Image 1: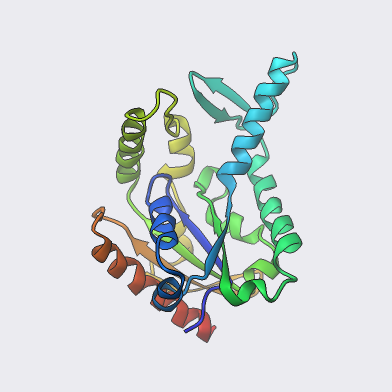
Image 2 (image 1 turned 90 degrees about the horizontal axis):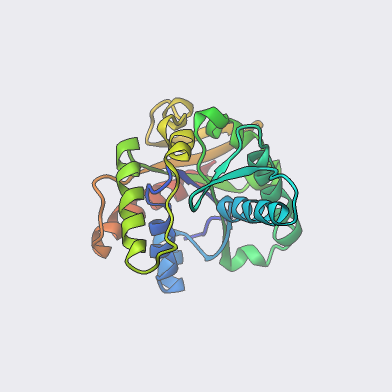
Length: 242
């Protein structure tokens, strides 16, 4: 059987990463481990790191100082083009993994550390991102990329926003400017040679990957189980054979 120690989850904004995680979290632990090779999920999501810094900008502005990393437009935050927050996110992944998990073998007996982020080529793409992760993370990592077209990510981002508006007037969506920055051009196909699965070498470490093709959108749990399960079983075979 076996479970992944580190699963790096990537893909376009609104491409289905959150739905993938939600599906897995709702499964009974035994079924999740046996059929999907995922233990209890500990999650790093760089969106939370970014959101924290944007709120800090609000507080700096409130006490009379200039914002450091972002600007506000209506109820959106836009990261400044000069900001190095994305680089800080990688170092936070490395720091918190080392502090909380890497030296705790018992954690990995029943848990999977899931590291989620999205990157566009203007920010160096996934090629740069992976090379900023520590060897200690990469040594036990597998990568799952949830693939949708740019047009589909735009559609789902808008649909998600409209759905949230039904529940709250504070609903927000990823701004169009950032959708272009993180979504329009991605280097996944380039760094994988357009293969659906296989290995990539990062810092001389052999890291398995799989592409989860997430179009058409599925909502039926049985269909999602087939889509996710097939890909994760393939990824585990690569993971155990690396």
